[in-house]
Image 1 (cartoon, rainbow, N blue to C red):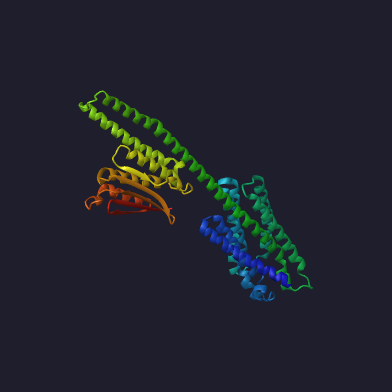
Image 2: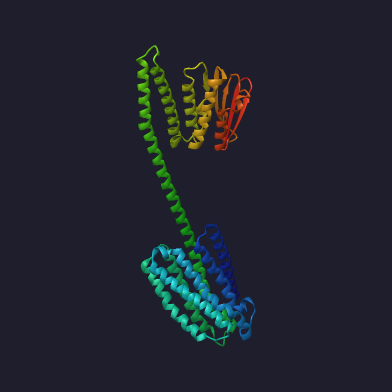
Length: 438
C-alpha cells in the first residue's frame, strides 16, 4: 500500500469522527433528530473501517483466522447498523411522515430489515455459525431494493431529496467499484493485506463526497428553517403593528370623539348658569374635568402605542408640550432643556416611554399640588449611555411625612418595571433624578 492510500484512509477516519462529533453537538444545540442519526451514522462508519481493515489499524495478520475472527464478530452488525442510522436520518431529514405516509412506510420497512439483519449477524457470529453465502445473497437482494427507493424518492421529490438521491448514487457507485476492485486486486502479485485496504478506497472517497454534500444540505436546511422563523416572526410583528394601529384609530375616533362631546355638553350646561349657583353647574364642571383627565390618559396610551414615537427626540418633545400645557394656567413657570439636541436614533420602547412619562406626570402633579414652588424645570440628557431625566422645583421640598405617599411609591414601582433607578434630593426645593440604561 502506498503512503498516499494509507493517509487517505486515515483522513477518512478522522473526518468521520470529527463530523460525527460536530453533528452530535448540533443535535444537542438544535434538538434536530436528523442530526442525531447522521452523527450516529458517521460514528458507526468510524468504528466499521478499523474492523474491516484490522491489518492497517491494528497490525493484524489476515492469514490468522483466530485473530481476524475477533474483528469480524462486530463488522457485519455495525455495517447494517450504519444503514439503519442512515435510513432514519433520511426519514427525519426529509420529514417523510408528514410529507408522504407511503414513503414513510417504505423506509420504516427498510429500518426493520436493517435492524433485524444487524441483530441476526451478531447472534450468528457469537454462535460461530458461518453464513457467508447467505450474507452475499441478502446483499445482492438489497441492491435492487435500494435502487427502487431512490427511484421512488426521485418521482415524489420531497424538499431536499436531491441531496439524498445524489449522495446515495455516489455511495452506491463507490460500493460497486469497491466490490469489483476487491475481486480484481486479489491475485498473486498483490499481498492480501494491500488488497484488503486498497479495495475500500473507492467507497471511502464516495462517502467523503457524501459527507461534504450532506454537510452543505444540513446547513441549508438550518438556514431555510431560520429564514422561515424570521419570516413568521416578521409577519406576526406586522400583524401586531396593524392591530395597534387599528386600536389607536378606534380610541382616537370613537372614544376620543365621545369624550369631546361629553366635555362640550358639560361646558354648555355651565354657560346656562354664569353665576355658578346651580348644583347642576358644579356637577357639569366635574364631568368636564373628569372627561378632560380621561382624554389625557387616553392620549398617553395612544402615544405609547404608536411606534413612530419610539425615539428619544419624540419623547422629549411630548414631555415638553405636556409641561407647557400643564402649568399654563398656574403661577408656576415651566422650563425644559432644548429637546432638539436629543438624538433621534436612540430608541425607547412603548413600555419605557409610558412609564417614564407617567413618572414625570406624577412629579409635575406633586409640584403643582404640594411644593408651593414658582418654577419647575425638566432636563433630559444622556450621560455614559444612561438616560437621565431630572424634574426640579424651587419649592418647600418633600417632608418626611410625604416621602412614603402613594405618588412616590408609584414612581419607584414604575422605575422597577423598566429596570431604572430614581434618586430624590430635597434641598432648597426638590430634585428627582431618573436614570435608565439605553
